[in-house]
Image (cartoon, rainbow, N blue to C red; front, side, top):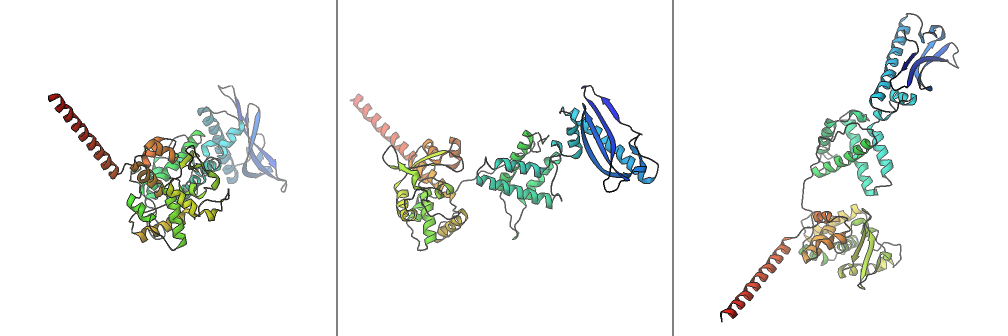
Length: 429
């Protein structure tokens, strides 16, 4: 029916597909069938995973000989695969891609970019980003990956999916899966913003696929990430003083309390406090002690003058660190344990807020700095932010500061009015 097809395309490329056989080493009378693709004289071969007896193969037609059912089935299969190979060639031309024998083979085998899978893209992202992103950020990406795998298994009934199958509905379904995901105690696991963070990370992975030209159409085009704004927790001046004035006989609670307070008066994050050492403390241009470090999260340089409250804590644990250069300055436990102990501390003192270690950083920005008149530009530098807009998210002017500023304004109005009245009396006289 078909012999070797030899086509000369408008692009001046020559392209042909032919079926041929090779003898089996173990069974001399059995032949294995292959397809040979030739483009501009360069060949690539594909095993079709089919075999035929030597007597049943017509070498002149490159097809099975006879009309028995097995031979008719074989020839029908060869015709289908012939058409598939022609179609692969056509697809590459339509996509303006370089047409080679290997490119056609890859497209046929599903090994080219159009047949990449979601798992392949995630693996590529994580392999390449592990040296770029911080460990904590990568940990979040791994969590998003686990949710995607669970979604595929439970809702899509699949272990993987081709990238070309991703669409708007996949995103919506994944969003609903996250919103309704419950733990073993039947409790919802994620808030709206938690769901949005996972989708945001997924979107960044997809964007990488687009740049790699693995994803032809962005499934996020019509999807909007909708984060809910909320007031970040921080301690008021009264609550901060309440914690400062409480001593705990329990050593672990006392240590976490002190480390938390240290963060309240320096603005350093949990990881930056944990990794702080003596060699990062030095005298500044004002002859006072400063902390010179780099933020683990952003790698931004941070220079923080050490307030007396923070210095007292350093001196309290000087014996712990032993003034050794590489030893941690403060005895801080894991972030998970620290947050657990802080909840115990809040309950014991009677503070009805969900206190985590990061609350200390917000407290530094608001209660310690902004509420005492420190300009937001200075606060931004102390927090190690590259943009002022980032600080504006963290910090807020509290009501007491607003009240104080308005009272000062009223005093200035009153003073100006009194001065004006004195001047008027002088001229009337």
